[in-house]
Length: 119
Image (cartoon, rainbow, N blue to C red; front, side, top):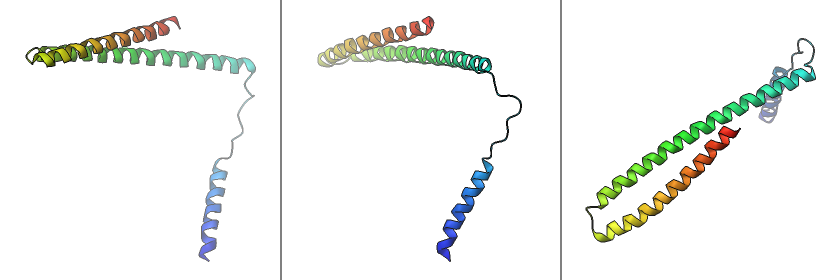
């Protein structure tokens, strides 16, 4: 008896879910090709605006983070000034490498910003 209970329950659930998915007949005539084209154009425009907004948001966020990293790097330099010669030399190497990477990232962000302006 229990062997039949589970398949029966599953079949009942399946039938209920299928009956709930009935398509309602559409009201009015089907859309014309011009209507579809207009809606597709509008959707493309809205999508482009959304992408531009997200790109701008990302660029601003990354610029802020790079500014913060640069400040923290400078603060580390001030703290390293009181340390041993070896530590100061290590910091100088790190500082030079980090500043180069930050500038490379700023260049890439500028390119991303320019791409958004061109679109």
